[in-house]
Image 1 (cartoon, rainbow, N blue to C red):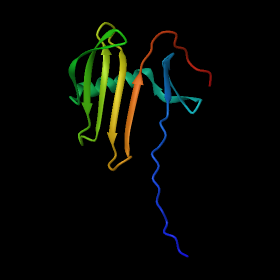
Image 2: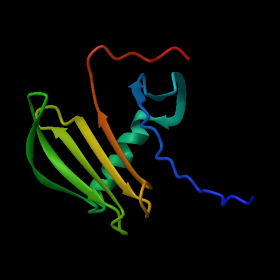
Image 3: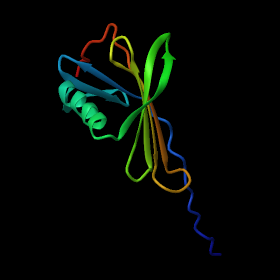
Image 4: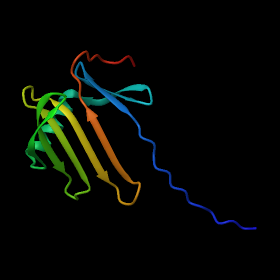
Length: 127
């Protein structure tokens, strides 16, 4: 007897990634393994500044994040398939929250990322 082959598509499981910016370096934790990325904190800051300069990022409104007033900015890709929202502290000028949505086309092929930033008691991880 011949049985038809079934093509099962499973939605990927949510993953948690942690990043630490310390001592001028950027560290990433995925699956409980810490690695040092090839980027510096200065390069990451420069990328954010470039987004603001090229007009792909614009101010939307003010909102509160964890009791702190933040300016909300939105950035969209030229294709319209990716959008990011950033909450920047009005008093400190530091990012507090970032939400990114990317449409790769088709059901189950979208990515949603939410990043929260903390600044107290941050140290470089042991690698």
